[in-house]
Length: 166
Image (cartoon, rainbow, N blue to C red; front, side, top):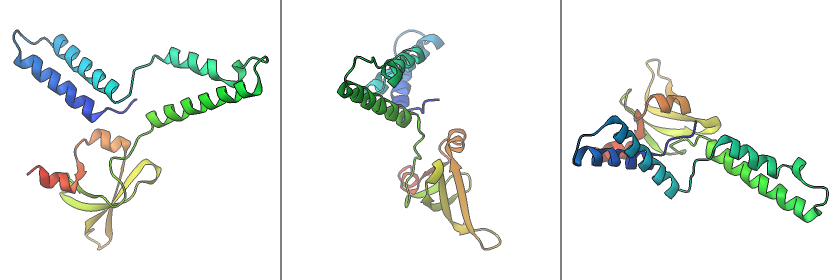
């Protein structure tokens, strides 16, 4: 699934709030339409557009090396290969999960009420070394992946954000 854009979600929420404050009654269809429209409009501002899978497959087919005509010259073939490589890289980048923190960031785990420092983001896992030791005196380490972040939204925040919320 494509990751959700926080900025686009904010725009969607604003659109729903505007519908709720405006004249007339708010229907669930109207709210959903307002939210989706605002979300997609913000994503377009961010440079993303929705593309059907069959259209993407057609583009891939058009650009694959097998689709190159024998009449094309070497230069044309190389340009087509370069174009497809760029498209593949963009698709891979758009589908990859990016950890929300980088090494050295101070974070707070809301559920554990503990602060720590991000020590690694390898293999799409955020490793945090917490300031509090385990009952046995060992260093407390937390490992958080994309699935955890999706199911525990807002549980691991930047320590500076927690201070700003007060």
